[in-house]
Picture: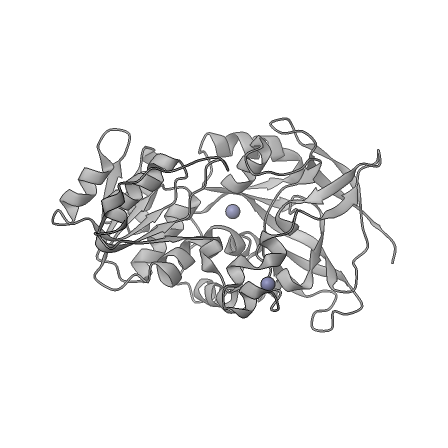
Length: 365
Ligand SMILES: [Zn+2]
Ligand SMILES: [Zn+2]
């Protein structure tokens, strides 16, 4: 099969402008597909990749999830065909590694033990990698069959593109890991797109008290619109004490940490009640360490669980979250702040850093 010329935003050096231009994409091998991209979100994962905090190797195309249409299939792909509308997920499900067979495909070894694959070459001959096996900031994507899922026509591109990003992580944190029950109290630390989806998830789960915590006034206002019962300004008050005050001095039944810094991880553990559940989704840079009081980790019986992409089982959860969007149970209208062309990537980056967008989505390439 021939190679495919396409256009991509390539990060050639950390913390420097992207180079938007032509790359030569490799032909799909037997178990791969070529997808023509329709939409891809820009999120904090990509910002950290750009900054050099995620152990990426430039030149690399960032962007960890996308939606699009199948443009070519490898010889061993029989269940998807040219023209099919699909979601490309950042978490593959190979079905045969230790973790997939143990029921934990969120830890699939194809992703967690592998490095970003080379998918293309620049005009000067340098090899280009695809971040998270997706590399979504590109007109076309070369991806493995095991990370591609069918997408119904009823959900618009920009909305559907959020499924593989904030939706899977936040709803998985609420439903799969946090197991939030009706009537419970849920504290959500950090109101970026993850935290805001978690607010919506906690409301759907029937939480009675949804305590949304952030230093940014616009984000707190948005959380209140989406169903938070209480908002806490973490820039002016002690968030741990405030959560205790709102929960009969016990602490929250479930805490979802969606901020990132090590201090937020510590606060999340401290604001959970005894025998409560703490779900940790935030990541700062790879070298961050967290200090916690030993007593809280032992005698207080707290359940502290890490969250990679919402502990996703892609074949089950992606159709589940798509169904909730189709039925109107999940509302994405507050999340897609603005749609962009690929050439506007530096503006997306700066607006993301200034928290102007909840999620900026590329919809033209
Ligand atoms: Zn696997
Ligand atoms: Zn994301």
